[in-house]
Length: 164
Length: 422
Ligand SMILES: [Zn+2]
Ligand SMILES: [Zn+2]
Ligand SMILES: [Zn+2]
Image (cartoon, rainbow over all chains, first blue to last red; front, top):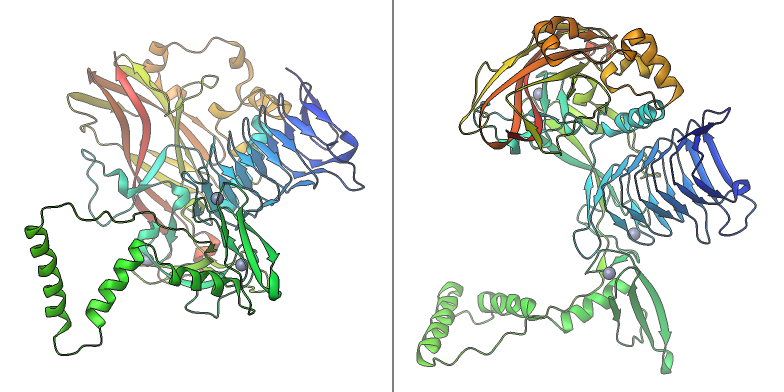
């Protein structure tokens, strides 16, 4: 399956389902993999409804769907297979592993890892350097993440941009 | 080649390492460790002492660093007692200027309505008062014990009084064999104040030197700047394992069916801006699992890894390169040339010319290892490797007194996952 390469180094799969491109802003060196869904047209706004920084890696089948407010994603953010992100703010250097749901109005600060299958409920704020796992009401947990992850997450995102 | 998702763990404990009986509770991913520049040893969090430097509520960003005894937010940041999601709060008006407050979980079915309030009070005070006025069975029991011990009648000592209470209870049970009245075990749950997030500085337990400290700006609690940060990933090499050739991915998560001899590749990657010499020793024989003999052949035991580079692609061992992107493909052709289009070497070819399959890059080495396993069993295969690292001091460590070189020794355990011998 082939990719379209833009002048700013973004790689976008030809079978990614992108709607409302005029309301989507992607900075540089980002990868949008197969079957990724970017819904930029869920509402109209002067500023972008989906915003990605640099070196973001959106893995197969992940989905970004803003509701009434934008989805803002910083730089060096990795979003795993089958994960869904609703209106929320995600800072720099964040890994969201596969099969996660990030609900509306949640905020994820710098240097966080959201483990596979996690559900982040509406309006929850995840402080910087956190490792989050589980489903609320079942096994939801927020632990501290070691400071070394600032460097490691950045390298991980840059490597994914090279290795695909 | 991920520095985050790899299968190496470092042994951190004062108890000597036993390769025949690896205590995995004392092994940690490199990314979770500090590095003490005085002791020149990796340090797990349990080998450090910590101080709370600041604390804040992640929800409303209020700084509570000066409120020593607070552990929870005192503003209107409430969380669901059942699922920890946020509670939304609404107000209902009643006659005579009365008000009641409704807490609804944004995620689950939980809700709580306060009684009607006539005097202004904080939400915390309202919830606390209602909790006290209507204690659940657990708090009732606590109250009874507290009263039993600290009751106002002083003619008997509290201890004898409690013993008497207990004896009474036992006697009553002996006399009346009827089952005791059932306790009401439903614990009523109240809205909970959100727990504060803390920032902690850490000191090495052995030498009390700081390994982590914040340069704190309390006006912006969500920004983390460090005044001191010694992380093991900045000094110790990342060690990972892969299949011999790229293409097929190695995963410790998958059960591997091996028939005796396997050849894998061990990779060592230097994170420092100075070159280092790494000595690798693998126990010549150890108990991998009951009734399994293990023999490991490695063509070289000592390598010199060059300094790392800002050109990231050069720091990735060839085994991990892919041709998924133009950049990756270009680098692969540059490194492998024609070899890329030839069929991979056979097992026997590699076994006989092990040295030819050693590969080195600017800051890394890839070394093939022959693993001979004899027996029949399914087990979790852990490969312990003793690493000795020597280098000149990297710039950051030059300011630390006491050493004129870096010299570290530690056990690195590579977890290969489940192996079934067939
Ligand atoms: Zn708060
Ligand atoms: Zn709830
Ligand atoms: Zn120390």
